[in-house]
Amino acid sequence: MKVGELKQRIKMFLNEYRRYKIGIVGLILLTLFSGIAIFAPLLAPYESYKHWNDQTYWEDVPPAVPPAWVNYFSKKKAAVQYEVENPPIEYVENENAHIATVEYDFNYDIPPKDIVVKIQTQQLANPAKITIEVTRPDGLTILIYSSSDLYYGEQMFKIFLRGDISFRNLLIEFAKQHDTEENIESIEDRIVTVNVMKILFSKAEPGIIVGKAPPLKGKYIFKIKIPSLVYEEVEYLKVVFKGAVYGLLGTATLKRTAVGRDLFVGIVWGTRLALIIGLSVAVISTVVGVLYGVVSAYLGGWVDEVMQRIQEIVASIPLLPILLILSFLFKPTVWHLVILMVIFWWTGPVKTVRSMALQIKEQPYVEAARALGASNWRIITRYVIPQIIPYMFASIALGVPGAILTEAGVSFLVGAETATEPTWGMILSEANLAGASISGYWWWILTPGLLLTLTGLTFVFIGYALDRILSPTLKK
Image 1 (cartoon, rainbow, N blue to C red):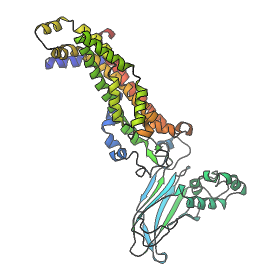
Image 2 (cartoon, helix red, strand yellow):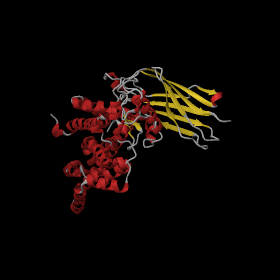
Image 3 (spheres, rainbow, N blue to C red):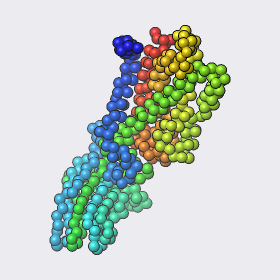
């Protein structure tokens, strides 16, 4: 085929494709998803993807909080993520301690999820104790944390205040000083359910201990006192006010821990994984199926019979139960799932391709090539398969959604225990295990579910248009 003729055919195809608006929509969606997949390392750092299951990496992220943009649509504004690294540290000689001062402007209705303090020091020569006190906007100064002795040899101290017993007890005692006896008695049997973060950021008035006091807005000054012995210094200090909202897509909980993960990272890299999985399975299985069907039809006779019986046996094996069993037993990665799906998926186009090849091999130009001594392989690759390529393109497009949904189904059912990659199915699986639907974590479910639907529709739209264009019997 000459270059000019090829260009003419491509132009005719594009003109025909423009007639199908549904195909244009599919192409726009495919461009969008492809852009996300290609630029994934720029949108979400590879480091975040690499450490998707690393609890230490995500310990500064709040668990299961909605996206930050919900503040624009909500009457009650939630605290956003706020981090302070290496704040001013002053050495107080008469206390023999370093005192770090951190200012936090709280102008929200919903308090932070947690406060995390990370301290890196030189090795302590003797036991030491770290204390944290806060001066509130109402002028009250309260001790909110007093550590146990920190023995020598430790260098990095991590304090998660919300879950710390000292922090809880001190805040509850503070609340009891300002609340009524009735409210105090009402929480005696459920003391562990008291929201101590809400106590810290509420007005000191009746209702504070049961979470009914209004928020106290203004500047909070935290003073972190770190004992300083001879030759010891504070090398690094970080304070994280974990937001009650976070990022573009909110956060998920990391496998039943109090640590969150940025869903934006999982969704972006999940898009790349979804396209790679879907296209790999669809392309490889379709190419194998087309070759298998053409060879079976062209050779005919007993070879055709044997090949068709093999195809029918493989096609009769239920794919999803097999994948579930293998995934549960061997805990494969998504790449192993791709290989397993290809092993069973290739049977799809065989029957259709065989019927097409049976007609093509009786055409005069095929008979002429055979009479001139052309080999079977040459006839198959030069005269038969080119006639089937249009069907193959449409079959690939229509096969991608099935591959993506199959992987998502397997990851959903067993992914939270086996898969390490952040696929959409695995994200939905963890949401299911965390009870996201009954807990109201809509952002955890809606985004991956919507993307699975849109991705499937993308290739259905494109496949429909290709089928209409490339299949003469469907042209209007």
